[in-house]
Image (tube, rainbow, N blue to C red; front, side):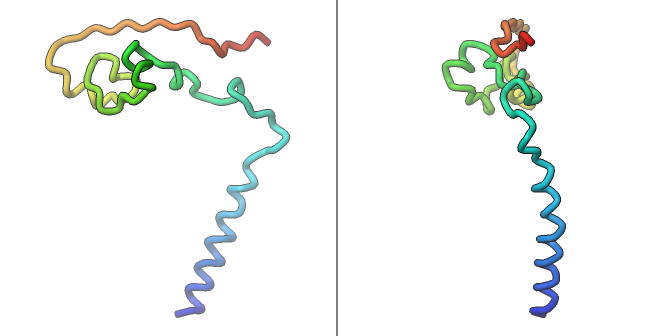
Length: 91
């Protein structure tokens, strides 16, 4: 039993090691090199006031944080959002 546990632990360690090598330390890291930054833009005044804590919110702006919250809407709603990206690249 101990031999099997040792073999399983060793196999897990060897298989998990290549995942650490996928991070390239020479590649520049910063907000301009990350994906999906649009998800970090606060949507709506209430979202900004609550610090983005809108996971249980069920209003029209819930589509940006919690699309399942739209199921709890009791009336029709129309939501328009516009923002100027602050992190637009100039290069």
